[in-house]
Length: 338
Image 1 (cartoon, rainbow, N blue to C red):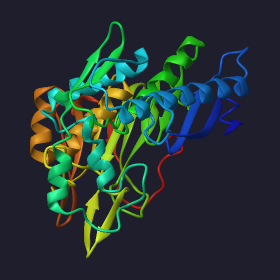
Image 2: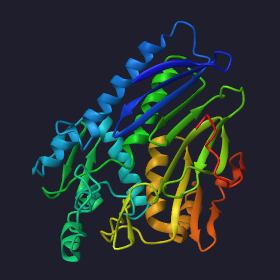
Image 3: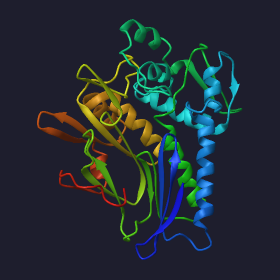
Image 4: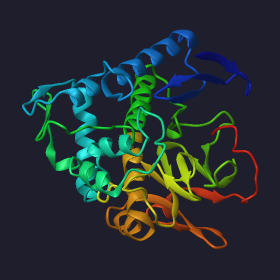
């Protein structure tokens, strides 16, 4: 973990650290007087430890891990924070008709994208079908008062990796705002939330990556002064067998990695938790079904679809209303604010 003050006329405070198997970055412009950056950084790190302690599948003693190990099918009391995330997850599951499903955990583990390393061999189709029987968001029930969750069969396993980072971003943003901090950019593993102005006095400039494996280049720049941004893609986390790529993005409805031509989808929303989950849902649905859902639900989304000539942009009506400008598709580095 580091805490440092960078200079755009001594206006930018930049806090960084590790969490959720990735890194976090908090950039603050014009930190209010009386707030100690080191103390704030410790508070952020503690908050993220608490989130991990509730929702991590990598942490054996987390509340979620204990729930996953349990074979009970009655109500199990959990923290209200976990209920909040699961309620949002279930809403997105219903909205996407199961394309987003936090009970996908057994498939994630089978394909080697979970706490264990990548699988040495592809799972047999029969095994995929057997494991898929355990995946169904409708078999997970969530109760707000008193906060509790239950599973209809004992081998249900929940994986929040497609929504927990966004929730962590929102929690940090809420913390900053309680401290009177109005101008910030919070990032956990590429999921971001923005408020106010950047170090140059204008909107924050957010880079959307061109979805090319092994390369860092920019597809488009967004200029934002509020909201959240999340991107889901098939170009970072995957493995190859016999020349074929297998993405970490699994379709819970089939049990297999996605095979369509959608390379990435970026979603803008009010909260990072919702943007995170929606980006995954649209990525699973693909360029046609995902676009239809984005239009129907007025989701601001940018789809990058693979073609023989590169990538084709496809934007929802709501996305076209977001202030943005195109950037040359050269191999330049993302802007400093990313």
